[in-house]
Image: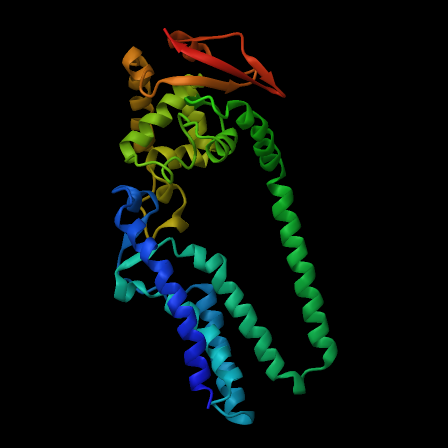
Length: 333
């Protein structure tokens, strides 16, 4: 009896989706050729069956079936809804069996799939409420709330310093608005500038997401950033040991962080040595042509930053102080 109502509701949703998918498909068709490499899109038909949400979902399916066999009728919407939530992770993590494409599946595991499973779990507890004391459900609700607040508070505390620095960068972004040109600066200021102004940056942690550069071009930009920052070959050796982001920029994020892709090869000591040699040769061969591509217009730095290499190729004006930072106008020598 509910089929006609269901069809009407989903018909409206499908109509809205049809209008939305047209521009989305146009964007996909016109994306930069290197974007698939940048976002680590994998071509694979390999099943992915042992992630946490899938195993929890399977357990919920078994429990729900047993409850339905004992106390409920299969056609009941609540049973079908719980089963759909529990089975959804299995489908999401294995769509590549048919599509042949897998895009960073850990996002499903960390985020939406967990919400499906938690919703299904509490709905199952609702089915079992006849056999559960009310205080148990109350304790579960309070426990979930406390855990959620604790995790949220910890995340906010861990990112507090970065968030403060990004907010400081907003004042710098306002100063640079309407003053075009490429900026040399350091993270996390690169986040503020690229989202609040039209200025380009020499390098950013997320350059591969908002540019059409291939891997070789991004690595060259990173080397220039290190060079202008006064990083020596020995400094780079130290960074390789202690900074995972540096390894990711040179060898690929998927090789530094194994959760991003299926089975990336590990970074070997020999590769690190070759990268150090490559950077040394890059620094020794650096010339005016390299300095002019891209041509820098501004440097946003602090008084403690080492700008000796930058000063070899660019002249700085007297600068404009904004909080802890100085905005220098640059001119190629």
